[in-house]
Amino acid sequence: MSSQILVIDDEKNYLLILETILGEEGYEVTALNDPEMALGYLDESEVDVVITDMKMPGISGHQVLEHVRKNYPHIPVLIMTAYGSIDGAVEAMKCGAFDYISKPFSNDELLLSVKKAMMLSRSEQEILLLRRTLVEQHGPHKLVGKSRPMREVLKMVTRVAQSKSTVLISGESGTGKELIAKAIHYSSPRRDGPFISVNCMSLSSGVLESEIFGHEKGSFTGATAMKKGRFELAHGGTLFLDEIGELSPDLQVKLLRVLQEKAFERVGGSRTIHVDIRLVAATNKDLKAEVDKAVFREDLYYRLNVVNINLPPLRERREDIPLLVAHFMQKLSVNNEHNARKFAPEALEYLSAYEWPGNVRQLENVVERCLVLSARDTIGVEDLPSEIKDEEAQFKSAVDLLPIRLELAGTLEKIEAALIRRALVKSGFVQVKAAELLNISKSLLQYKLKKYNIQAR
Image (cartoon, rainbow, N blue to C red):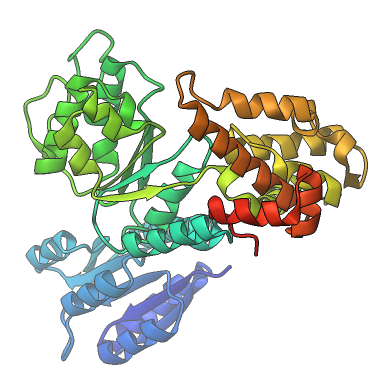
């Protein structure tokens, strides 16, 4: 891949010199003595480095620099300036120029500066490509699901992404809360900024404070150097705090202050650091119940719960299961170099009827297990784990999801509704067949569908 350099100078002899020197080094050079034409060329062509003279009639080198920095911030700009105009060159550096070259220049000085600028340009292009790839991988269009609950979630993600509001994502473990946080970030105006995540449950309170806010050298035993925290690292982007309900009371107070003032101090420090971040938090707990129990601060809860996105458990979006299975099959086949395979319809029925206490994460693990252990092109019921194909195990799994203390009548109704939904799935939503599976009449099934507000298509 050739390296493209645009040279702008109103003195044609300098254009010829630069074109010759740089061309002999293998660079592709476009030399223009009209700055206005050069700006038009930038809009239409791929350029890696710009070299521009400082003083030119019409449009100055400063104006060229401003145009490039505003519209093509990944392109380094070298400023050429006549001897004696060093102050202007220094000012250009402050405005974002990569380097300046004094006229007359030595060839070695010019080529060294161009080489460094070209290395920076390549790095910037790789970063741009990586960002585009991340946007492609984590945008809302990559979230799998066509069920009504997931359509509502996707609608919320699309709307909230364009705002700066704090988002609280709630849902059971394994439902994909971090995927939603990434979808919000990579479809937002902050997509070019960092996405920084931290799990509040994985670290002790003291370590977590240092991890979030950073620390100064010598602030505690083992702090041998200054360390930036996740808030600083997320500046200009999004900070994702997973399992926010696990924060200690002390850290809740400190987080509240950051949300209110957008400022904090590192552990052991006194300098106030201001940050521009978008906070997305997630929890598998009922934070309102935690507030009522005086475990979680009410003022922090309302700061976090500006926009709430509740992710449904997999058992409430069963029609997405075949789509998720196909998605995981494709993903795992590529990552692990497995041959592309499929699940038999009967196996998919079992997967669709299972309660999935571990939600989407558990489903992905089951798909991977089947891929690894089955040698057949079509994965059948016999290849499924026992807890999925064994009805007794399924029943125990469903019961294990229930709390120890419960209201029996209401719970039995929920179980009955779940059994009806499962029968509908296994019968392909044919009511006569579903009634046969449940050993009840079609009229009784229709009564219960109405009673539990179950959509039978």
